[in-house]
Image (cartoon, rainbow, N blue to C red):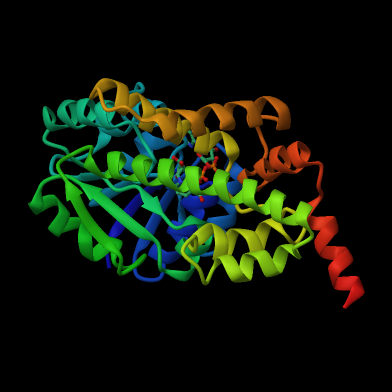
Length: 305
Ligand code: NAD
């Protein structure tokens, strides 16, 4: 049983904390005090800020924040984490972050004898809750070996992607691919609905064919078709991931034709649907384009049965 600090208790952070709390003592902090209180009621220890977590003698601090900008803030703000952590502490960043910034943060922490790894996740809030989420780690072999038993209390799917920053690179490439699949699948769903194929049947058949995958077998039947339910992942966060992936492509002179296209569709969706909507809502772009209503089509099919 270890004492672990955790900063960032949003959709993903809270789900990860709940898994970790099964075996460890969690010291938690978020700017949103209500998020802290919910987890304290479930057994976590409340902290009064990043500096307080740093000073609480934890052996590892996990961050799960929107972007690397907030990670930098909690680490290096006045009297923040870095100023209070004991030498030898491990910082694990589970944010979907920026590879280049993470390398710089790790180098700054190393000057103080503090180690850092990046360990973003893939598999959604449900994957975290069910303990199946993939955790992709960037850092030295030694640090990976040190963090692995703690991550395994979240999920057995813990991978060493490479050196510091490789976890973030792996994650944003993964999300770039999954976004492209999402767009292609929603486009196909709108067309199938227009042809007159029942949406749920479309999902069922798709999930058994060559286009099968998470979007076909989970996103469509569980979230999109039954009333565009929230998937617990903000559209803006996915746009951020696409921006990180395509920036990495530019930095490394790797052309990303499909990834850049997907990023622009997400930009348009944010402008049309709002900055605060869940990722499920992007289906509306394709419904409007084809002049169909997928959820209404399913409801009509259910009534006719
Ligand atoms: P979220 O927006 O639900 O939560 C972010 C939390 O960070 C909020 O509670 C917010 O109050 C807190 N926060 C922001 N700035 C802070 C600061 N300076 N100090 C303390 N707290 C601060 O986001 P999320 O869905 O939990 O995602 C977190 C990270 O995990 C993101 O990088 C995201 O891309 C990644 N991720 C999310 C999912 C998912 O399905 N939600 C899946 C994979 C990866």
